[in-house]
Length: 79
Image 1 (cartoon, one colour):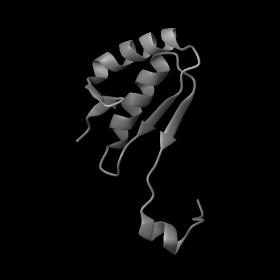
Image 2: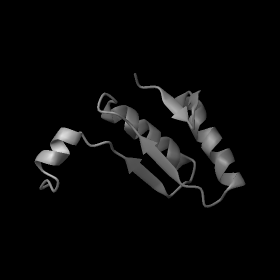
Image 3: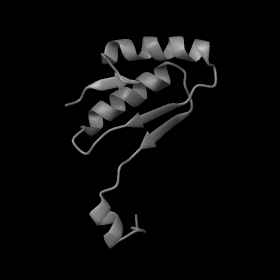
Image 4: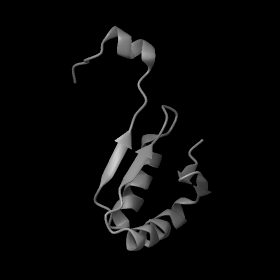
């Protein structure tokens, strides 16, 4: 549905950068993990990545969930 959660708390995109800046001030070596499902538009994910960058957080990870059927069919897909 395009909603953004910071931890388990829903947050507006407009507030995300501010919250991440505050978190970085508390923990300068903070890492961010962004997760989305297959229904999340790429543009929405890009918005979140942008907010992380604007907050000055260089350590960004992206989590993906692989479809179990696809993983069994080809565990090492070619790119």
